[in-house]
Length: 624
Image 1 (cartoon, rainbow, N blue to C red):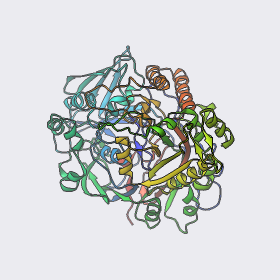
Image 2 (cartoon, rainbow, N blue to C red):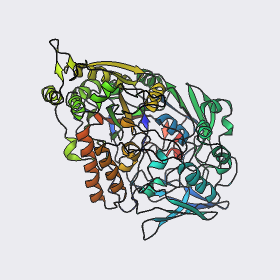
Image 3 (spheres, one colour):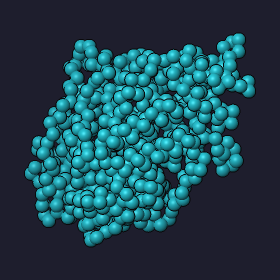
């Protein structure tokens, strides 16, 4: 479980330790005063009633997971879209962005998943998971009769291979390894027999049961690729292969990749070997296909929904009122509560040099960015409430903490935040020797004019508008901000190679497990983007130059992961949020309300605040 970079969509990444989980968040709109006001199509408040546990049934000798919903009908295609140029890979272990993680993740399943009604981890590929009295030993028993899409058996061999040869090696995206390290040690993973795997952590590790949701790879397909090294692995299941030979992608999830048209559309078809059945013991999913198209901007995304070309739409605040006023709408609106992801501005604190000996950031600007007074001056000047009122149209709330407003670990004291105060911001800048000339232009103590570039992903009209607001707000301090929306993939490329100065970005989030952000907060984390260090597969990352407060974050992440009591964990993550609040490596901006529109032709829809389509396998389509 890790956080990934988000172009727009919010990908739920959930988790707590069984027996230690507080109740999952509800669909509350506290703090969202204007969000559901007005007339038009009603917005349904999501108040799901928990269902009983999943049952295991024996079908032709296979132990299959039986869905809990109403019996549906087979057939049809579910249409979805995203603001994106498409995935950069279909290999979920090499993905660093939300689109790639979402689409690649559709092909694989984990040992456990999350019950979207209770927030509890439950068996998935596993039939059972037993935790030892030492809270370090996990014995996982797989279901009998599991098969990959090519008919090969899915066994303990695949589980051990995935964990020991992909995740442990840090191949592709090392975030998968980051979030399971305890005291820098990877868990021991071994097969006890064909259907039983034992995991043992170095110390008791509270998030580990949820981390068993890591997707399992087919060893007979991936092993030859892994033997060739990280470069070959990261290139495996790339977009070129997806376009030419999608049938070669072997799946253990509910979908198979049927076709991919670069930058346009990915179409998945049902996997006949998927391990779930309905109440009549018929293999799921019901739907024949799942089609994901890629659109250039939010306007096109909304237009496709209005025209009936897609079945689901995460409604931006500025379009909610318009959507509610449509005549004879053939969709329902659901209020899922505050979104679980975060949106923020960040400055590049990296003062190191690249492989060519050139500084990642101009040393003059690096000195500004690494000055906490400079960061806090920006933090206290941005008018978050204006962003919420004018851009989100009230469908959201200001955000000041590293935990989203939906998080059960939110530091309520810090969440109250502060009003924008340019006067106070100027006092902070004065403390660090900044001055203003007669024209009000800001200079550092060496006389350099304060000017820097601010990037975000083009096509996301919400973030583009926010960038304009920030540019105007910081002009009050005499800062010249060159705001430049660019292609999302280019943005991610700049982020990876360190060639950027300031950025508006989003991260997917977890309502239930703060440790999902370990790959962000750890000094050696794969998306510790504000001070990114060089990460190489199989080699330890040099963190000898970490800042004192980075060490605090490292220590708090470690403490939180080894603490099982919910209240004690809350205090630790309150401290982590305090460090981030004080140091402002990320300047958090807002938390949108998650409003979902779903076509009435889509049946068995039962969204919860934790996940809208948690029961996608039993969703069915009512044809006209």
